[in-house]
Length: 352
Ligand SMILES: Cc1ncc(COP(=O)(O)O)c(C=O)c1O
Image (cartoon, rainbow, N blue to C red; front, side):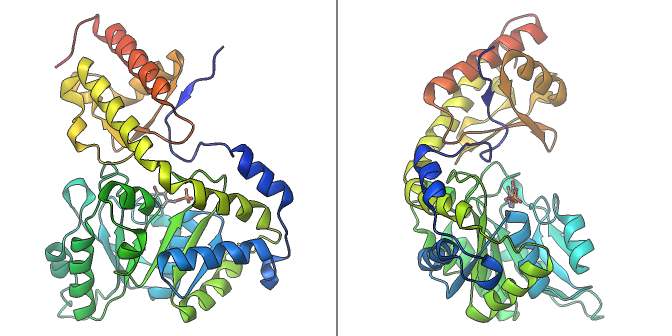
């Protein structure tokens, strides 16, 4: 059987030959002691790119987010964020279990917070019971369909947060996608937040790893909490070597992923125009509301899988992500598979 086309996530990429070579040749040490030279080089490079004092390399984006919130938010206090943000959805139990943190979620179209909605959410509780310690934004916003927050909006959010004495944290798992789509350098975004993380293991294509960046005292504490959370990963330079390659090779090709995602949405809209809005595709994420054409998303996922196309279901929609291991030809084939499955479910004909 031919290899299925895997659009479940941009995390499914496998290391390039250049990454494997770098991994094989990586100079390593024990990261617990801070003496893995490749990890140190990666951290230094990430601090430079984001314009922050320092950076710490960790296993996952979730670990980076959880370390950051553990430091910036007191147990029993709140984080203001968008209601479908990764930290408040997928990670909500982690934040509760590891740090006693709860969320004050804001519902926002396409996941996009504004200075106005944040300003209202951080109004102090007159009874001093619900205390907000942190404002967190996600860019691009995953459940929001890979939507991009313009840097001007982030600047305004920072301003209202600063006026309230609150730090702003960026879950920038896909900040390089936001940067590519908005043609805004990453450092312009990161200048507007106190601390951030981004993932090497998503669109940039590294096999493993995320990086938390921020002021020196914050990162010093983050190194301690990383160990506390079981994240001292010894000769991690083997992975960091691939991360360094991803940082060099990854950002420049993200516009290809974005074009592929748009082509995918355009192709799907031919057979199921009511289910997808290609104009809403800003980066590498496509959501299709199959219920709009009378098909349950999990049924669609299973039928697509049987036909050789792997997708996930998120927020009751079929979710697909383009990435480095997906070519324009794969997108064409994915559209053909989609059309065939829809024809099978519907008994033929475009579904509106
Ligand atoms: C927006 C966002 N933040 C954080 C994460 C967590 O990253 P990881 O899977 O590396 O824990 C993800 C993962 O999909 C994500 O989409």
